[in-house]
Image 1 (cartoon, each protein chain N blue to C red):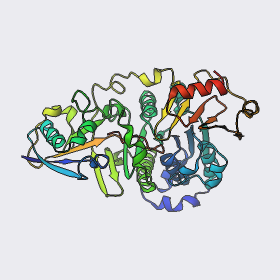
Image 2 (cartoon, rainbow over the protein chains, first blue to last red):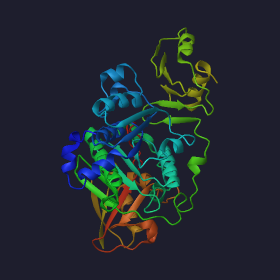
Image 3 (tube, one colour):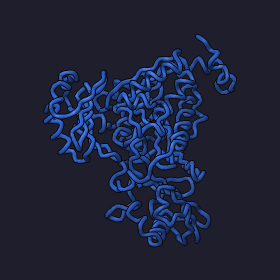
Length: 337
Length: 99
């Protein structure tokens, strides 16, 4: 193993040569590879975390490039899935570690399989539905995970140590809901992503190095624009349904039949029992209705005012509507019931 | 007694852009009532239709979560700091201030 590339990090005392060996022997899973995920993946891979699995359901678009640091204009032009683009980029950054991109929607059916055996789970998602699923799986399997989220110039993060500290459901018994009017207006800036991802990755490194006493131990918020920090210490909720009663309601659900993606006028359709799709056949069939573009990972079908992006696992993202019924109708008509 | 209520960034737009407000109150409930009577737009972000604190809005007195103290009856004293910490869904889809 060439340790020279890690020499500056090895000089940092809390890591040292032994710590570097530990990092190289560690496995991390990143759920979601948007702004936060791409930033975390970049730092984890450069730091020599030995194996990183990146799961993402989305593809690269031009509007992502302002803050999603792993991707470039070619990825957007080629409509590459984020997990695929990230894997390619990260392998070129550090061939000494294993990087695996998984194009998938994380659901109750696959999450345990995707995270089992890893040392830490990092949050790069944008919704509480997936976070509760991660929290259930992490608490059930006893894997630490690191919540992170950003909006506008504010970021929020918390490290969850199952059995040793509060879990996400202790702090937020129910998800944020309603009041969506701010989604499209608040925006987001890259430096806030940088702050959250830096704290998340630092926490991950401490965990992987076995230095738990040095974790920040708080619900930690920071506004990079106004330079204000808020740090509070949430307690364990003895009545918590997840880490107290060990009921994993989100894992037991059959998986969402559809997910409305907030903030960009899209609905995702996910068939429960998908048999898989042949994108070449589908392309040939859809070309009579409108322009179709396809690569090895997905197919895009424009049908004004909608755009359907279909993945080989049968999943589709329908842009141009927030109405699940409209999206389901389009899916049934053009992709299959 | 004046206590300081710290307003998180996402909610400042509903609180006259202030990052903290001094309120005369002897309990957390009184402080939040005083705050929302001063800034009416904040009310729907902090309380549900039944007037109960939304469960994704956490309120701390100094460093303690009021859910594990006496909730809105938690007494506050001169120079205590009440912090409101909303959750953020955030991420690349810019979803929800969650406030």
